[in-house]
Image 1 (cartoon, one colour):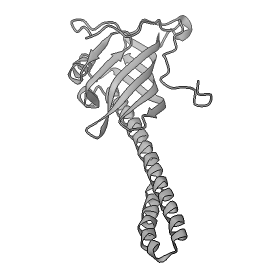
Image 2 (tube, helix red, strand yellow):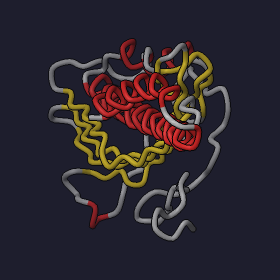
Image 3 (spheres, helix red, strand yellow):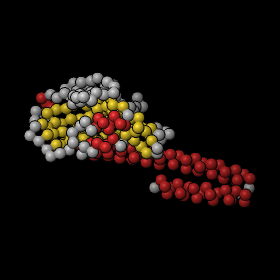
Image 4 (tube, helix red, strand yellow):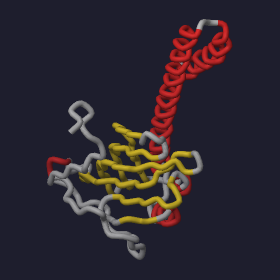
Length: 233
């Protein structure tokens, strides 16, 4: 629909200048003002269309990340990150740069018989910068992690991520997953929570966690990157 509107308005802009010489000066002035207004409308529509496409691209990017993580396709997931990106999951710390993000992901389990590793990417709130070069997004991941006959856990992580358009393509710039609960499937969340995944032996982070907090049954609300869309507060 946006493309069709832009095509029609562009045709009008091409037609109007031809008729300027054939109308009186006063009418010509009015027509020039109308043309200018149409040009402004075309520009505004193009910006809206671009930001809408950015929103779609970022949602697809984050959803793709979730699918690759589910299937432990670590190189595919790492390819979604920008060159100077960071990754911070839970309280393990921060890994800096795409190469270290890739190395971190390869320290996680590989998908095999008896392993369940689901990370559903839900509830997006995405805000794209006016210039269309950066964006921020908040997501919720519902996690199912299990090893056959050994363990089964539910979890939730709230993401506060940033994105960057690198070489014309949207990529993850900073991925920060705040764990809010991690519970034993058999005990249920009414029995309290388990600690989040601990440090990776022999693979320390580049930086300590940017924030320290407690998981359920304690209450912690990851900070919002956006203001209330109704009140502006």
